[in-house]
Amino acid sequence: MPSSDTDPRLLLLSPGDTVFVLRDQIAADEEILVSGQSVRLPQPLGLGQKIARIAMGKGDKVIKYGAPIGSVTQTVAIGDHVHLHNLKSDYTLTHLRGGAPAGATS
Image 1: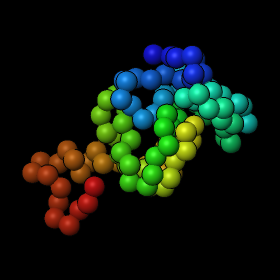
Image 2 (image 1 turned 180 degrees about the vertical axis):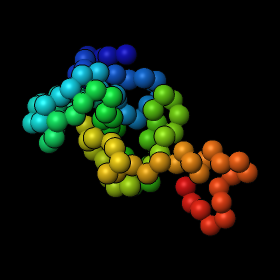
Image 3 (image 1 turned 45 degrees about the horizontal axis):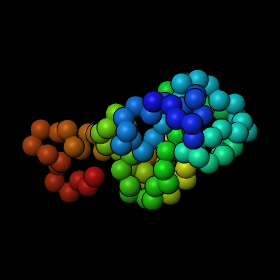
């Protein structure tokens, strides 16, 4: 679902998603348009990587495919790479039989 305010190399999988998925590789220091903002990527990113569609604060849920896939561990700006360095997966805790183990937090 590309739109005129976002680089066509970014794909929105579901209307409520907070991240775009890269359709192609993007080089380091390349300028791209993300949700109407011009962003320069500090590192190269490859096919399938996630880019923030909106700004998110620590603990905010990351939505992909219309479902939460985790929470950000630090502030994320529009166009930031969302990956292991700033994303905590909530998948395991929310999909255990009987819920989360005692003392676990999501």
